[in-house]
Amino acid sequence: MEKNRAQWGSKIGFILAAAGSAVGLGNIWKFPGRAYEGGGGCFLLIYLGMVVLLGAPLMLSELSVGRASQTNIVGTFRKLGHPCFSWVGWMGVTGAFIITCYYSHVGGWVLRYVVGYAAEAPKIYGDSLGYFYEMLGLHADGAASFPWLTLLFAGIFMAVNAVVIIRGVESGIEKFNKVGMPALFILLLVLLTRAVTLEGAKPGIEYMVSLDWSKVTFDTFLAALGQAFYSLSIGMAIMITYGSYLPRTENIARNTGLICAMDTLVAVLAGFIVVPAVFATLGAEQIGKGGGFAFVSLAKVFQQMPGGTFFGVLFYLLLLFAALTSCMSLVEGIVAFLTEHFAWPRKATTIAVCAAMFAIGCLYTCSQAAYPIKGVWFDAANGVSFPAFCDAMEFLTDRIMIPVCALGSCLFVGWVWKPEKAVAEIEQNGVRFALAKVYTVIIKYVAPVAILTILVMSFATGMTLS
Ligand code: PFF
Image 1 (cartoon, rainbow, N blue to C red):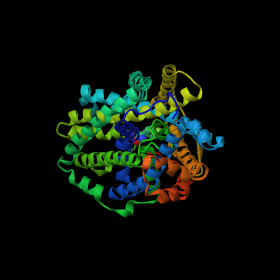
Image 2: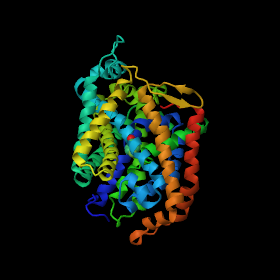
Image 3: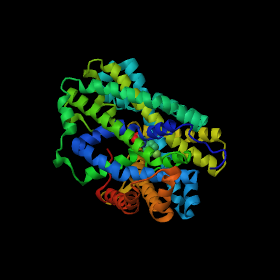
Image 4: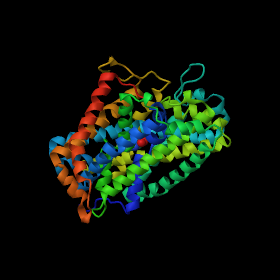
């Protein structure tokens, strides 16, 4: 163990922090819409398969690599294997940086909606789409204005992250998660009770357990795999950083199981909240409409639900906790790298990096609706295109950087560092890892082939992000 390196103060602290990283906007905002589009019960089964078969082995690999190296994500690849693999770490930090730029802004929108529901719910109910666009600086008459208020909320969201990260691993991240995660579970249970007891919720519940395989296509498998990686915070090397703060006494195999189970449970519960609630209040055709869905369609749900405004505030608070704990894991991954690699001071680095990410994120918010800022993109089906800057950012991370970094981690553990070393790391302190053989086959063969398939298919079929 290197001296002076931060460590988690307790077992539960680590598990909650890692689960806090995994449970985020991906679970509560993206998952329900994906589950609906993928045929309800069928998607749930496919998703569970992806988590068990690919997600958990990859998370276990990242945690064991991190704990073995006890260093940041770039240093890890240098220290344990071959310096030529440090590109995986660089891609991880760069991806984490880009994700944080927009994740923090969506976090700001969520904060704005917490305040919006508490202070001016009738305005949201009156014109939910108009309210959403106005938040982004586009007014009903088509005029655009600088969305300074929304940017202020994003700034506050980012500042909270910075304060927690400056406080450090144990007294910042761990303490926050120890309160935030139980709060999130309580809010989730309250909302679940409300949603499933709504009149008309039954068809939604039935849909979520129905097995209609006619809706399942190859794309459903791709969507489930991409969603599983994103949701488990895999492929950004964040779990490598969190693993590096783990003492050797921890059973990482069991911890991986717990973190994956918690993350999946939250996603499934969110599905059983949102889908039945939308069925009860709106009708099935309104669900699964991508980004604006959590902000626009759900307004009608809360409008029609008894006690809806109160539950609206609760829902966005839930989303806010989830987003905060995920965002801080991203910032920690970046700050840990910068402070260790360049020996920069933690406080100044955190402030500078958060300010930079906030500034770039302003382009993300502004390019949503108010300003036509363009990015550039290429895929085999559509050639060169110029999507909105915000979409280009998400394509780059979700479709390329996460899978490429995950692939790099698999190849590294499977073929460079070798699965035997990972198993030896897992089996410290008398732990017996019964699935060692299965794990070895997955990490060497199954996972790289599956990830490569996503990458190739994403390019070949054109990129549509929902
Ligand atoms: N897992 C988070 C979510 O589901 O929202 C997002 C995320 C956090 C992705 C951290 C990647 C990461 F490294």
